[in-house]
Length: 636
Image (cartoon, rainbow, N blue to C red; front, side):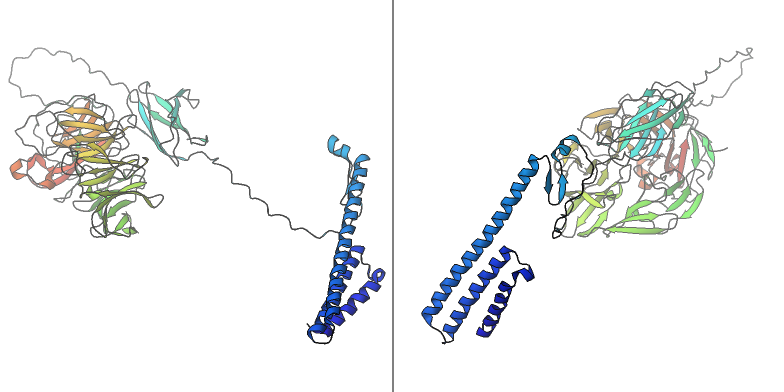
């Protein structure tokens, strides 16, 4: 630093010191200026020595004196600050003693603080303080869950004279209960489901009067205690069966030969056949109906309609539901690729762009899910316009919708995929279509026969063709809610024809053939024999709106056999009671020597179990067509 600059700074400080009253410095500020003046003097002396113009000893003495002067000035400033603080403390003590204090320009009375609000006092003027930035407010955390679950898809099914099943879906897991009665005041309640594990509910309503109109609504509560109620709904129980009148005996005629009487079908109970037990019944002669024509089965009373007119056009398989979500459409997805009216069965045309493994959505009437060989994309296909959207799965060369026999959860959320990783091997995936995420990735020891999802979406089952309990044998089950969802649990050894079903209370089952028709509970593997000895059929649980029943049809059989259930299309209760309901003889008999897979019966019910679709060669000969049986006539 040049001496001229230091000299100029010293001059400025000197002027400030001689004019304190003009400028208005406080004692503290004057002491600070004195300290600066002393430091400048010391710097001037040292600079002179460095430039060879001063006495070294004099410079040192000057610097030491400057340091002493600076310390004294700083001490004086601190003393002024202490004196000021002491005066403020004394003033505060005096104000408190007088029951009043003037703090920072505000008049505050101690008695006011104790007794409540007082008249606003005139504030004492004070210097305007330097504005202090306000602290950033801590955001208030969002409130907890305050909305009840959204209730949708309320359906009444399985109506009898004394009971009905009410099912519904929630937007989140919650409890379930049904209020019901003869008016909108209700008055009766089903047993409340108190667990929060399910978003799909079914409640049996029992103890009802026959031929009576009931009002009902469903009530659900989520885990946060938010309750929701549906609107009022109604259903009517079936009327009492009319007693068969006792015929009046006619006069005894002269004896004449009479032909054998035509069998009289047992009376049906509403839309379902009468309850009975499994037995053999001979197949009487009956001509094949024409296209869209209807005949009545003489043994069981079902009304049979032929619904295809082109040879080979038929339903695909017992585990593939041919009707859409609301029953207004049906489809031949595997054989023929045709779209039908779901009620009249009129042919509505082809299905251009139909994907492989095409499976109707359970919730959207205009949607099919599917996949294609050699492709890693899941497909969503709309039959109304033939459009397709895709969801790719990187890292896989192919994803297959269940390997032909896979089904979605009843709400369409969980989808089974057999995946082929790029590096080789096999994986079973449970895909969550709502979260768009794979929630189970299970590496498999071998290629399985099929992969499928249980009705609630909790379980994924993998079936291997070899029977047994080995790692690649029998049925393996994966629990989405388990601590290790990708770790399998062995479910059953024998892997013949099988499908999911439920008990009337909603318990999930795998119904399969193992020395008879066996129902294995998914939650713990316990098994119940439904029909002992019946071991030659296909199983279908596609009646997802009729809990408590599963449907069966013969698989391979010969015309000379007489076992119980031979050639019959029937449903069996899943409770182990042995109760069945037979709709008709299928009449698709084929001897083993002429067996054709595509001519197999492959019977499958619609969603509420009131209709059954199947196919084959009528009486074992001619072309393959498809048929539907119902206990109510199709005509007006």
